[in-house]
Image 1 (spheres, one colour):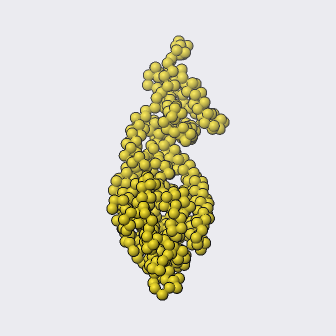
Image 2: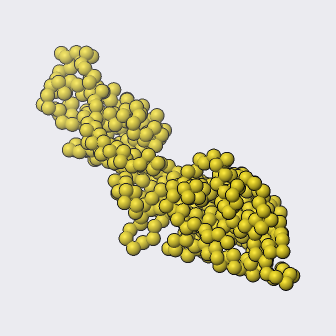
Length: 484
């Protein structure tokens, strides 16, 4: 019997290996003792039985007997968790019970090495850090069914649409965020695999049945997560929008004495307008800029008058400021009666400033129709906002390009705490914050882009690769054998 290589983790996997190359490597491994692997195998190496060797049907029958009784469990921390010698011993004992001859038989080379090859694939599964520990235990349930499939179906290793391979991949996809065997979805997958173990004899269609059940479960879980995550995203973005608006208001009203009478206009109605503008159009938009600039116009219009020109400017533009402010608020779908109530104090403040100012002019002798309307085009001071935006942009630029929405990660959650398997759901651009959700679409962690970038560099956190776990394992095995 051959020895299964255990150094696959030292070989880089090429997931785009040509089918002919894969077939060649597999054939050379299975026929390793033949001088010419392309020639038909001798009887001792053939799947057909002989006086010294079990035939394939005997092996299939013995595997079926073991299918419900031989249990393998993944033990976290072990380098290789496939005990091939132990399994083959159990298989040979099972076959011996079926043998009626006087002399003990052995397994022929082709079948023995086919089993070795499948075991190597399972070894690669269990070394794959992209698969969670509980899911590795579930995959081990398919160890014997996959060995039988490889013996029964010559296309198994070459058909990437084979139902047995797709069933394995689907188990991994469903379980990507599962970190406990107490999970309800874990138990449902376990039940589906138990049904497969009970049903699968030699008919590959048993895998089609299991795959249908797994695919339905995958869709149910996906739809549930999408619905929950949509609610989570909406809440996060609304909270973020409120923070952005509050920050902008604080920057624009800094060192401005806002009379109590117009605080509802600024802090309620205008903040609502800005909030809706941000949610609908985002910060880098004409709508947002217009809202911020009109706020600057309002704030300038309530400042004390310090010159004749300022008096004339306010006198000429007061009604225009109020009318334009009204138009903005109406367009934001706010209650018109409340809008008028909020604007009335602004008109009163303008009137008071003009009447009480020491720079008051006799408008009968001054033509104010030609006074500049520069007040209407007041530009907000965005230097502070731009500074924050530049810092956030620099932080986000440090992240690897594959850090994006929808990607799963193992996330560092603090010293002496287990890592969490979470999906990146929202990137808050202005704050350079990353929000991660669990498999239920619920918010779990928020990370600063700088901190997360450092965690990725030091492998405290890491990306979970998005690939077929079977193809990846097969590719690792092929790369390892080819290198030898």
